Image (cartoon, rainbow over all chains, first blue to last red; front, top):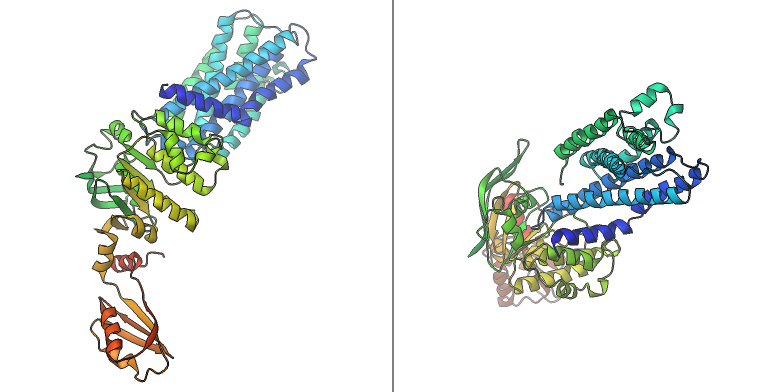
Length: 234
Length: 305
């Protein structure tokens, strides 16, 4: 078996044994059931909100905490004494965390679409494009946290501190049209807010605003580059 | 043939010189120790040799390879146990050995290592549930899983109880017996004296002496003591007699207890003088000179500040 395949298998087992990754699936599912039972049939607002919550949990908690903990424990450093580069571990983690976000979202969409009667868009390509851009933007923020945090605990704390204001500005805690106008406008320029709004557009059958796509792409590239610039292996 | 050749190694961090012209070589099949208090550059030196750090100047060859330029080829042939590293708490013992074995072109059979290092019954245990000694044995097994020619072990018995330390020492001797050259970084004198064929003594960014533990101890010729108790019926006072012997620098007497201080092989002179003069003594003890004494003499300061 190749190194990457073996590394992926072992890291996947570790991810499944980690309570945090189970919560990133269970928390949005719980929110979906508690608040989603009262949504009107064909609703296009609520399901995108739970999807953004799920991707946000993976990007802002799970990814930075895992990577910062690996660095803190010297796991990346230990790898760099073997023929395998620690970059392989980073790549495997990114793939697995992406799969975790994808799994959570697929589960939420399946449950909401069947049990709760929420609207599920048919334009798969647009959904995929928005999902990829939004996830890339959230992961870039998570990678920057991992790059700058001294240890796993700090990474986790910074993730929590960022999550709530971002979730508020993104209109995850209350509908965006009930927020003060200025906050809703600011929200469109945050990675979570742009993601939520663009998903909502796709759900409503609209073409997502190019500005929102641009905002997500900009976060993914600029914050991602900053993360690469500041990332330390030890 | 020298397995490791280091010449003129220097390393500075922000204007502070950490290594100042470190040179040594390690022969095939020996256990070579880097000994010194914390903060004297041992770990930095070994990390340069492993290719984890880039020296500012100097040359390093390990198995004929340059640790920076030929890093990938070198990492196939060395095994490393680092200070202060952990593994994910939830990884199982067999999983990490199996994983690390796939990193190398010609690995050892990890199942054999598992048994050899006494971890057979911990095969399915998670790393977080292991005791300190079991974790340490796992790290050594991991350092050997790639079938290395040279193993680097940094502070391998830190935090272990005395019994676990002794057990680890025996296993390290087995590693050498299997043909692996071992580089041991340690701040424990007893460990180095017990295990190492040769030692480089570090103090403040440089090597102050290199040799076998016995050579280092003999070389420095530190002051040491012979003690005994005068038995009832010893008529003469031995103080004056012993003070005049060659090598003796001082004699003190407290009741029937006598302590003689000196250098070189003065103990033989003391015992034969006592016998010649028919002075009966008991509890004769010659204090063993140790690497501790050697270090103090070499550096002018105590090893344990």
